[in-house]
Image (cartoon, rainbow, N blue to C red; front, side):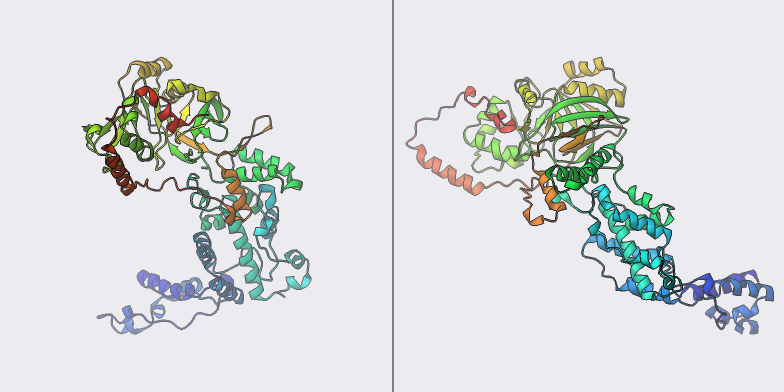
Length: 570
């Protein structure tokens, strides 16, 4: 009998929940009992032909009827479902995700409203959320970006509204409008005004908005007793974001000023930063040309850095530190091989001699570069390397945090320490040269390996070449582009927009996309025009008959040329 009770319960429950808008408050008399295929199973006997519910004891039948009574669809639920299904899916992935989340959220609620009662009167939850959205400018957002229903305040004060004067279609439309505004506010609070900076602004801006899933936002705001506080909590919680916001509020009456726009652009970048920066992290702020090591929110080290040239920028991204290598070997990047080493080889190979570079095949075997016709050979099939030594451009230590950008932090070639004394330190090919890098290694290896400073210095001084220390602890390396920071005393510090990213962000926030100059794609494959090289070689061969014997230029004539190409000169 218990099995029959359970079976009948599921049959009638399926009938009841098949109708959208199910509500315990809208129950009707049960419909006629339903026969199932199981009722006619072989060997069931005459009793099996009776409807399942009639085969239950009276008290069991009463329990099933009370639990599984089907519901009528209310006009409000019908209107909500129809309005949601009529919504356009959206023009981008984020809008389509929000559309799907809305359908799922209200389907789970049986299409019952969250923000309005059945008469269309806003609930306290709606009043709280809409008031916060109207104050969007307090957090650097534009209230005009969020469409809220008009006249809800007046409706709440109108007696006619409280007796159900609003049509279900109006209630549905207003309900959906509030939810869509909440979702859009949540997206913009997390940086969604510029959804893909690396594609929309510059390939060097490898950041993405820290979006929450739309269903998480809807469920979170629905569960919150203070929707306004919940919406405020969607903004970055970093101290710098709040300090910049307070500076912006002081300039609100001059919101179109250059200073206010700068603050907004920097606030937007904080929306792209990881919510958890790490309990220990290295922060390289490129426009400031400064590095900080932060532990438990306190700066424990601050030093100068050298960054990429204007056409060879240091990219903006976050990765985790993987290795610290003492006496590192330098593997020349593809771009330098093609654009600088190859022309030198075609002229005789002065750079290879001056900087003690080696040519190796993909198996690591040394190849004699003097025996190769560089007008007919693609240098990309080889590796060009520099073993660590007195002329090492890597210096004594390298900090690796692998990415598609192939940049890292390292020491500087001793004759180029002058770079750290310049105010504007854009001299590298994209990597960051660190002042006093052994001090940085001492801090990080103490935290990760428990090594004392003397042990670190000894490894750097007398250890073998390519002496690697694998880092086990999670230590993020943050490359940022903040042109405005507020110190602990509340003083605003600003820095030059050396790469133009601040301008790009400002134009995007103002909707002036057509005015943004993205620049080159630094991740595009390096091109090599062998046909042009071969043509140049033919011209050289034609002239060779009348030319005097080749005389190698002295190494001294190349001094500085390679470093000029690597680091630039002022």
